[in-house]
Length: 286
Length: 253
Ligand SMILES: Nc1ncnc2c1ncn2[C@@H]1O[C@H](COP(=O)(O)OP(=O)(O)OP(=O)(O)O)[C@@H](O)[C@H]1O
Ligand SMILES: [Mg+2]
Image (cartoon, rainbow over all chains, first blue to last red; front, side, top):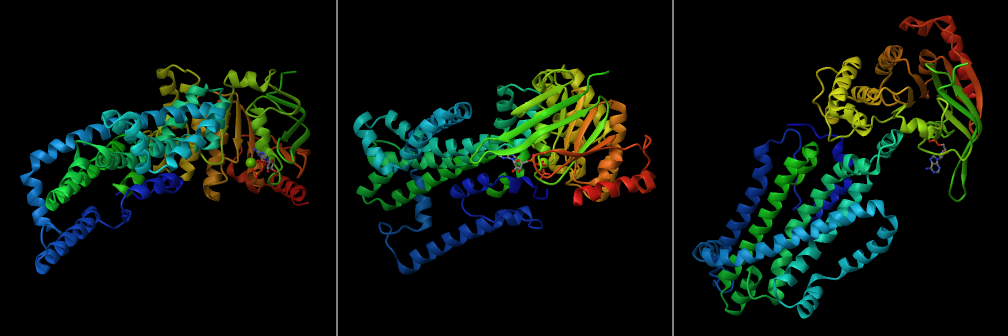
């Protein structure tokens, strides 16, 4: 295993930004084997499930109150088709919003590098917009745009926008000043400074943003469906609540969190491929 | 007479701010072509600032700067400068080879030419076989050698070095000094070399230029008349020790 490099300490923003989204996990230390690294969380999850099962069974709790994990798993399998059909629109709107929000954030951050006054004008607005809670914004969006696909995409795009914008701006800004001067000393074009220096420097920060927004866009999609939807996992949550179908409620929750994990995993995988020089940081959250 | 590589006359520099900081004031200095000039002086006296002015990164607020007969910006556009920093400042996402090729890309060197050039320079700085490593896999001294190779890839006529060896230990510094002299004798460029180390300054230079603590006046322009090539033993010769003592007296005063 490679030893931790200096880069890890060079990039505090990545570490702190990703810490918001990822579950706290010990970084792989020298001497800790790969197996142990994965074993600890797996054992922890298994233990929680076992305690849950034991509690439900020993206290004889009714499934409509709290279903046992075995019952939830059973429901998940029995209703696999229904749950999958509900997950598809959730995935679609999460992915569309994720793509739009992140593309906008990246484009805007690049524009901000070259337009300082635009940055001063727009950035505070963005911060204000970000401070509005999703549950307050969703009804407004539903009233003005309706309950359709567009509303949901707008909401997930908004959710995906800010973490990436903030991370990207930090990544594009935080270049070594000596390197900027090196580029200047040969009269390099501004586009060269951007694409050969700022952009690669920002990639680890971009992925920190993507890791946060991949999970957040799925969660956001579910919440928007929950507030005002007629399909999707969020709708399934609220529907099964009204029907007192508690096992199905739990099953749809598990399905949602599996989606979140999958989104997070996909981004982490892409990061390993695209930012190989930053392996130490990636390994810390994977 | 041949035009000087660098000719500064009455150069002043004032960093704007509240209050503005007048770092350099009326500084004059000339570096002859193919000569090695060291700049030494107390911390904060404006040595790094001076290098930035010469490279055209920072415009002087007064006085004139001539580089090879033109302005600093002309020289910048003609890719005359090689810059080496205290921290190697390599791009972590590029391999050693790609780092050395960087400036070649920026100035539009033909890919085949810059690849060959980079390979030759890596051999020159004794890093053959390490082309594919990333900077994080190198020692501090190796990184600094990559930074030197990177600066040389565009064949600069003027090398500006800002405390390039201050982050490596004493032994590495001495071997890097020797290596730098060897490279310089092959490349025949002019060098403006900032250092805090008196011995290093004497060992390397044709002239040691001592800056005063404020206003950036040059308090001494000391020729070092030791024969080249300079063997390691020169460091303990009476002439060398006398120069060292003399510089120490000026700097400690
Ligand atoms: N961007 C800046 N804005 C304002 N003041 C600056 C700036 N850069 C440097 N200075 C000031 O100019 C002075 C000279 O700085 P400079 O970096 O040139 O010194 P130096 O001789 O290289 O010092 P050292 O030996 O410590 O590297 C210092 O007092 C510093 O505080
Ligand atoms: Mg300095």
